[in-house]
Amino acid sequence: MFQEGPGVWMVRGLEHELLAEARTIGGAVRAAIKLVEAHASFDSRHNLRPLAAFRPSPQTYWNAYHSGTPVSLTQLGVSPPPGWNISVAFAHRRPDRQPTHRVA
Image (cartoon, rainbow, N blue to C red; front, side):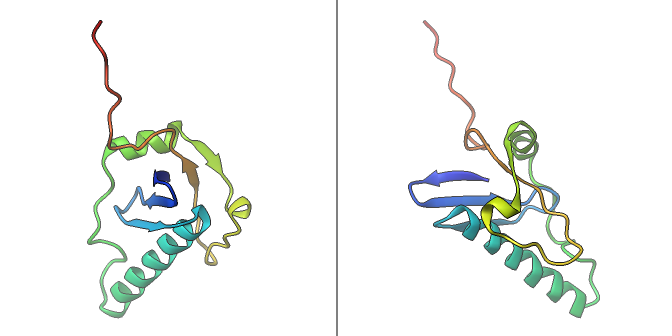
């Protein structure tokens, strides 16, 4: 997860490229969970493999997750659905923006 701007938090799925945003960190995580639940439920009703329509996120997002600061869902006041394994990490910067290198 990362902060897009003041009062805008973004959560991006890694195994399936889904994006949710909200004004709070916990709200963004809850929005992402609801989005996954809705798509998985739709897929199940239509005899499709859950979330098969969503490819994995680009490597830059995986790198941001692995180098980010882990945060427990309990700290965010979020309860995962039964049987779900959800991990959250704060990215130190927006993953799709590469740092600029200045030449002296």
